[in-house]
Length: 398
Ligand SMILES: Cc1cc2nc3c(=O)[nH]c(=O)nc-3n(C[C@H](O)[C@H](O)[C@H](O)COP(=O)(O)O)c2cc1C
Ligand SMILES: C=C(O[C@@H]1CC(C(=O)O)=C[C@@H](OP(=O)(O)O)[C@H]1O)C(=O)O
Image 1 (cartoon, rainbow, N blue to C red):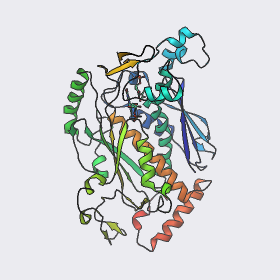
Image 2 (cartoon, rainbow, N blue to C red):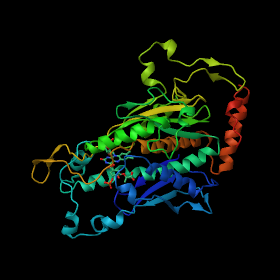
Image 3 (tube, protein in one colour):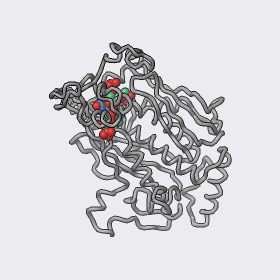
Image 4 (cartoon, rainbow, N blue to C red):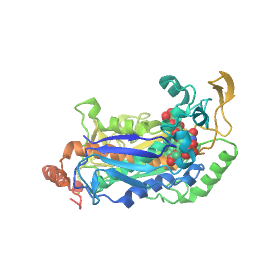
């Protein structure tokens, strides 16, 4: 089974991703991974840290001559900021004076600071919590997801995203279509599908920043070209809707995930909720896609559509009340620097975590040790389905 673990602290030397279970024979492009990393860093409203970092992937294991070996693929992304934190983050430094520098003792509401300190007994320095809880970790998930995107591209699968709401500014209230998200220009400041709205949103972020406050929002993600039959209704933990929701919810600051028109259909009758099956020249299709491409936890050949809500950034320049854990006296929460909003980045992160879940489900169904085995299995499945008229699922690259 394809698995991913990540490691690394926000201001430590580097972030790591270990992707195990990839077939051999998968050709990878370093530029394509770096492109995803750069897309994640882009976006208006981010703080000073993004001016320091310029994320680029390095490969530590599992790749030769640009082709996977079938062994664990280990990716690394250096933290350029580490040079400013080398003593503080040094794994072997025992001088208490060094350890006390940049100590954090007033937990920030909305972060893992207090719960993590209780859990791991980090009362003296909450930095021991926040270094790992930080969303800097998402760079590692994006690097791994970028590999999964390249794997999926071999089978005609593509994932897109865009910002649908920023704070109180709702740009698109319902589930997005692939065509809508295809309008997103990666170089636009807020990665919305509405270029005419971008200037107004930039001014809005500026105003909120000026007030010392922060913003969240809603992001849409659509995957196109996903074959029917990924995931399974036969066991609860094989249901792909559940796996997607887990992976998306597990991204820092995501507080809600909805598949298809999940929220909207709940408020209306069944006759408006489900997607009629219609014969067509391109096989059996649906005249609508309220289900967001998933029925019974199984892909049905339509676009996978989901949305996620991100809470506003937790660290405030005008901090909320907190307590100093050293003295147990009231004190404002810690503040150094922070993003005002990171909703544009969230879209890129979600594209890549969705790509990981889809690649895992794809390999669970068509998995083989070498890419040729995966292709053969995929083609055999397409042939089996051909009698049902699903020419739409025959992709040119297979
Ligand atoms: C891309 C990205 C960037 C973020 N940047 C910041 C930041 O600069 N400051 C901050 O306080 N929180 C930031 N966050 C959010 C926190 O990491 C998050 O609120 C915190 O980990 C707790 O979230 P949770 O309750 O969902 O785990 C960011 C989140 C993402 C996804
Ligand atoms: C570094 C990244 O995001 C960081 C996520 C983050 C947090 O608390 O989640 C806090 C900030 O880190 P710092 O305190 O070093 O400025 C963000 O910059 C990144 O996305 O690359």
